[in-house]
Every structure is written in structure tokens, then in C-alpha cells.
Image 1 (tube, rainbow, N blue to C red):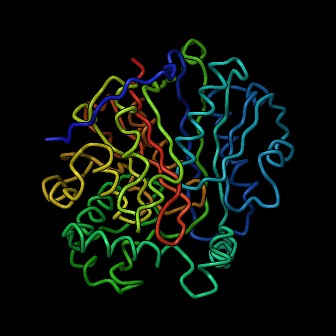
Image 2: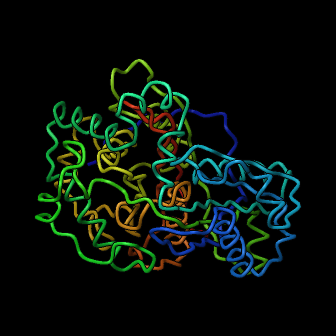
Image 3: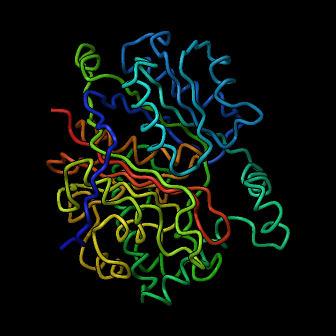
Length: 397
């Protein structure tokens, strides 16, 4: 039984006639000597190949990368010979897949662009992760990294410990999600983790920052993800399978007075999301959560209406969460089993959701999947992630 969510009356215009199509993934590698420009270029080339369009038809570009500096999207279009009339760069980490979709859809709807290439890519050199921690945010540079708690492991240990003490979650509950996602990943060809994971292996893995252990943490890597946003009639004319955008939300710096994060912006806007989409949590066939750490899955389950606050542990215990079972989540394996390719990690769930609703799954398809939910979460700052987002997609026909 899902938790009732109030559907708020929204004055936002629907995304009628605007679709997402052509999901592409550039296979991840643990380390790369290539730069972010190269990975993004591979993704753009894959969009050209799979859509049958020339790159000149991409008159809009929405990009994200955590390792592109000093360049932004401007450097991308110059580097790859694109001449868009609409351009955006979204440095928001784990919400970028949804936020890019929102912005690109409105640009196409308004006529500012006809076809928008949404692309995310990052490299991972041997020392990239340490350098990223040092320069992740001004807050981190001034108040977190100098005292030795820089990096997401310590932050999510703080959030996980609070959630466990407050709501009675156990490590076995987090482990069940990690094991289920690994099972999903075994059928996904681009997952970096190729071996099954047992609950015993999860429970006995070395601690990283208590109560976070090894398999609670994503593995940084290099890779890229991308998709196209265009009008439905354009997609039909090109013979492309597409998904419809039923509803989206984004929220930044939600509940800033909470002493530690136990809810995200989804709790503020979930009603609007379902109201805009015209569906309820019971209609969702699969959920691509943002899963850099398993505790964030639980927050999304609660805040997006699948159970009440504090009930996610029981919810997890009552579902398999595998692709062929009950309440499928992260059907490619998610970042916990595929890897986190910087900003592309924020696109991973969106690209997988497009594949599932268009019948193009690279791994196991969710049986009879018609409606999927994507969650986004990003920009961790000691005791909270600042950005939240979500989108509901539906099969095109």
C-alpha cells in the first residue's frame, strides 16, 4: 500500500507533444587518460549514429560534467564543431539528468530549439577523485575538507547513522537493496561490477566510515550518457522510439532548518509531480532512484509516496526490488553496481528509464513497463544534499 500524496493544483504547462528519445551510454572504465571532452564527444557521436541525424540538426545542447573545467558547455560545442542556438550547462551533480530534461523540453516547447542533445560525461584519472574533493564547493573548501571530513563517505555516514537511529533501519536493509541492484546489473553489459553480491559479502565488507561499509559506496569511474529531446512529430518522422514526459519537479536547498537531512525536496513537491503526471505511486512500474548511497534510496521511497516517513525499512523488507520481481529499482544496477562516472551518474537513471519505456533495455526489461519514475539527488554538503529532482516518463505508444 503506497502512502497517499496530495495532488496539488499546478499552473505549470504540461509537456504535451515533447518527447525523449535515443538513449545512449558510453561504456564505463575505472580509470581513463582521456579528458571529459573525449567522453562527451563519444556520446554525441552515438546520438548521431543512433538517431540518423547529422550533428548540425542538434540546435540545442544541454551538458554537464564535473571534470570539464576550465571549460563549460561553450567549450564542448567549440571542441566538437556544433553551432546551437540554445545552450545550457548544469553543474548540479545527481539531479542533472532530470533537470536537463526539464530545461530542454521547455526550450523545444517554446521554439528556442528543435532538437536538444542532453549529454553528460566525465573522465577519472588516478588522482581525479582527491582533486574533486578539494574543490567540490566553497563550503567544502572552507568548512569541511580542512578539518578532515571532506568527501561523501563521511557525509553519508552521518546521514545513514541518523536515519538508522531514528527510524530503526538495519544494515541488512541497505544490504538487501545493494544485493538486488547487483542482480539487476549482471544483465547490464556496461556495469563495472560483474560478479554477484551476497548479503554475507555485504555485511562482512570492510568499514569505510561507520555505519557505511564498502558496498554502500559508489565507485568513481569514467563514462558518458546522453539522450535527445524533440517534438513527438519529429521523432515519429525519424522512426525513433520515444517516451513521453508526464511530469517533473526540482527543488534546491529544501528544508534548510532541518538539523540533519532526513527528507529531500521531493517531500515538498511530490504532490505536484503526481498531479502534473495524472498518476499515483501505485501506477509506477519501476523506479530509477539516485543511489550514490543506499540510505538515499530510502528517502526517495518515502518522500515520493511509496511509504510514510520512517517506513522505508519495512517497505524494503517486503519487496524484491529486482527487475523481474516486486517494485523494481535501478534496473541497470544503478551507480552502486554500474559505477559513478561523475556528472554522467546523474544521467544514468534517466537514460535507463528512457530505455525501459521505449523497449530498448540493454539488460533485463521490466515486464509490461509503461510508466517509470526517475529520482535525482545532488551536491552533498556535509550534512545534506542540496538538490533534488524527479520525473515521470511513459511509453510513447
